[in-house]
Image 1 (cartoon, rainbow, N blue to C red):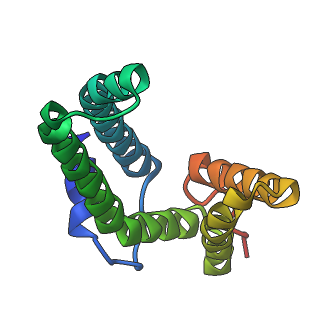
Image 2: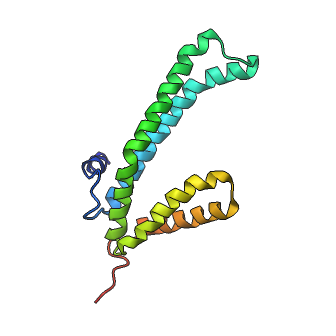
Image 3: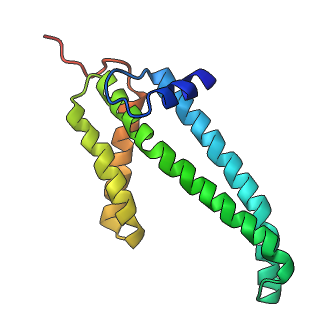
Length: 152
């Protein structure tokens, strides 16, 4: 798992080459664990001030350090998300090429990311499109190496 995570950072903007299923999914597992740990820490820090706000309708002076910590945690999450955005795209690109598909299939990922931002508008058609695009990307990601390669 650590080896795949290290390879992820070594190939930060490498849109050439290949990514095996194992490397892709070990990184995905590592990244998921990192986000789950962050969510657990954030929730643990946020519960106290939020409950005080619910009970009293305002924050007190004693809540200031915790609110500051919440802001720092949010900034760290934003930094990590931005730092991994391009490498995750390059990883997905290499995985698509590894399955034998044309690099043009990467447009599914790009369109999916764009529509995910648009889905916040609660448009059912956009939400459905995002779901099916993500489903297609998932199927490609779990496919064997050269699964879609055309024999000549």
